[in-house]
Amino acid sequence: MDVLSQLLGSGVAVGMIYAVIAFGYQLTFATSRTLNFGQGEALMLGALVGLSLVGHMNYWLMLPIVMLFGAVQGAVVERVAVRPAIKSKSEFGWIMATIALGIIFKNVAENIWGHDQLPFPSPVSQTPFTVLGVHMVPMQVMVIGGALLMMLAVELFNRRSIYGKAFVATASDLDAAGLMGINTNLVITFSYALSSMTAAFAGVLVAPITLAGAEMGAVLGLKAFAVAIIGGLNSGVGVIVGGLILGIAETTTAYYISTGYKDVPGLVLLLLVLAVKPAGLFGKTVIKKV
Amino acid sequence: MLAIKELYAGYGMVQVLHGISIEVPQGKVVTLIGSNGAGKTTTMRAVSGMIKPSAGRIVLAGRDITGKPSHKIAKAGLAHSPEGRRVFPTLSVTDNLRLGAYPRLTLGRPRGDVDGDLDKVFDLFPRLRERRDQLAGTLSGGEQQMLAMGRAIMLNPEVLLLDEPSMGLAPLLVEEVFRIIRALKERGVTMLLVEQFAAAALNVADYGYVLENGSIRCHGPAEKLKNDPAVRAAYLGQAH
Image 1: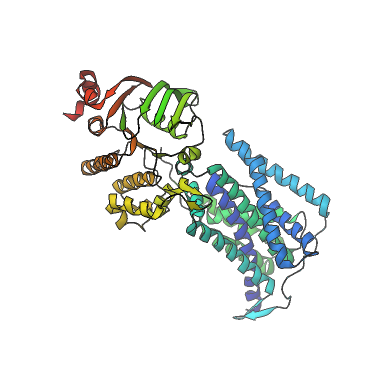
Image 2: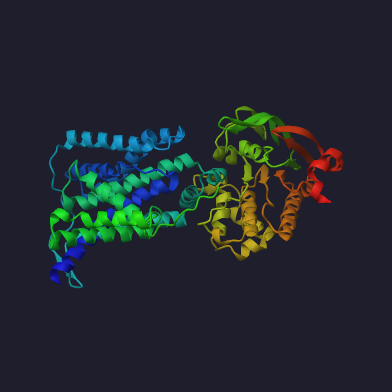
């Protein structure tokens, strides 16, 4: 029981990281029906930039700078890789373009920070503590809280501010949003900035647990993509549930079966969802009206 | 107020409009009638920037808006209530209306009294006031049409484009829509109206244009068009 509760604790923490990255996928999909396949690299860059900064300044000052960096990086991805593809009405151009940019970012990171996995300082104490019989490391709690807070902040922005409503309007009907005087191109750029900002934030959160390195983004980005598909690309609750399922499946499989198989249950679930409910567990199936 | 000059537009390789010219004077209601596929909606879309015209000029209140993106045209004072309503289903009625006033925002601060205008729209559409907190997607077709019109009015537009406001509505609601158009006309709102009910449209309009296969076939004061034998035969057939 003791072991299981610990597994659940770390599963939830990993799951929330997946959820917050998946949430980033949803943001750009909502406005432009495109995804940043370099999302994992945005996370990696956030973690490494954070690592370089944290040696020179307070952890809590570093966070907003990393987030700003992430936002700018995301805007660049949209302008360079996505906008031209949307403009030329290329159906799949953005897929290759975002992957290519992701690889470039990874190469640049390897040249700046090297190939090694680097330790990332934890802003909170390393001593585990017990809540409701579950042993947790404070950093895990921070990951869970930080991820939830980030998603909540974006949700509040969308519901409360007129600019958030302009974002929702663009997501639901691009042309009609344009008629309302909303600069929809700017909203799409903004969604990429927000998405990469979320990923950079997740990178800083997860780095003390996983170590930081140029390679860290690829696997996280892919798993978060699986979570977005499992949960549904248009469901906020979906990514949280999907993230938790994948996170817990991983930690328990790694302990009870073998670490070698830890990725299998989640990916089997992905295949099942794709076969049975392609819109995702919580996804709304959009019926295309002609 | 709105002048369309020698406008050519279409979709991809398909040319729909072949050099049409339309004038909408300030404070007047002008209607564009024609059969399905004549190019009425294409005209509206080209004016509001949803599609880029391939040639011609569109001037709104003295400013050339030809080929500008729709958000800039909206800011210049043109409101377009599009065919099929296109309300934002996941936002509330009030939020939809507030977004209608979005072009009046600069750096988060609105021009004029948006809350007051919201109240005026609710006076015009009491039904919307009752449902102000409901999601637009849960409204009936008629209510969504009211919302689409109300949303367009929230801009305080120089010119209001109404594309098929009565489409798919029950007869009673069609009457209601025309009552609203009349009320707007009394307030001096300049309108370009596209309607399938040509007779009703000519009753409310000051001036009319007949569009056929992407060209203007004839135009004139609404009274005159109503009594034109050719127009009567082709477009007012069901109007008894």
